[in-house]
Image 1 (cartoon, rainbow, N blue to C red):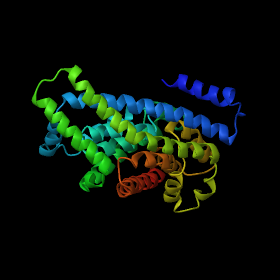
Image 2: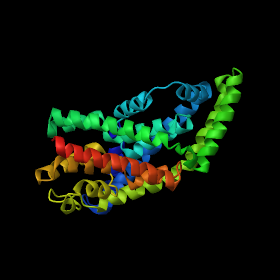
Image 3: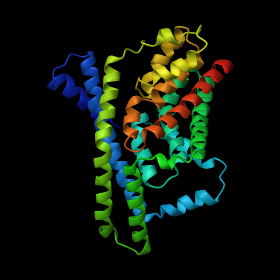
Image 4: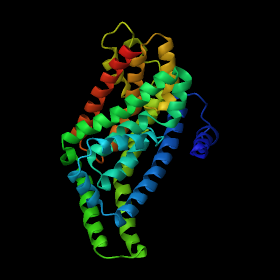
Length: 325
């Protein structure tokens, strides 16, 4: 869908700026141009759609339904399955996450989506089958869905809404009051547009600076950190290789499709498959750019709790993979 954008980024970097291919600066700049425009497009589309939906749909009914009906984790599983259908990296998933939060979806459910979306998608599944076979792929897909479901359920029990930033709390409060007013009477869409437009602009103004900073960090990491930098720390002879691989993966940034060839090389060099997959999950599911994007929505404490819970779940998954495979 974004092939045209990739061509534009390459044209700017290599034709207009004349940077030589393969250099650190060229790779970082190409990444920044491509990802920043892509994520801003996604952000504008998602926030606009969610604002339109919220203007018509009484979100309090959803919250009340989830509060009064015991779904026994089904809502988290549904969010994780939806994450499988969205072929986004961790940063690209953030616009949808912001849309869900502003739409009043429970925070734990949105976390389930945020965890699974970058880990499992149809492109990654296709590559996984080609590289590791159907059995390993099936185990990986199931573990990715369970990881999102369980992480969301754990985070939901902490009732972390109080750790959303004041900006997010204000967005939610304004959204609720405006939606309540629009739901009380049948207002034509043309009269709703100014309220919807103002809400979209307000959210975009608050988020865009964090998006650009986060992507800039990702570009520097993508361009300057060599892919084989961490190999010596996650060898088979290290009993703590799984947690080390997960933690050291956080500074790196890639999507599942981009990191899978690296995982294949690690496995061929003797790195246990579970350790390599834990490294992959850390790279695509947790990243510094993602943290920067989430900073506008969450306090550092909430980001730390989110990263901590997901990291623990990834480590457990890595050890289980090493036992099973």
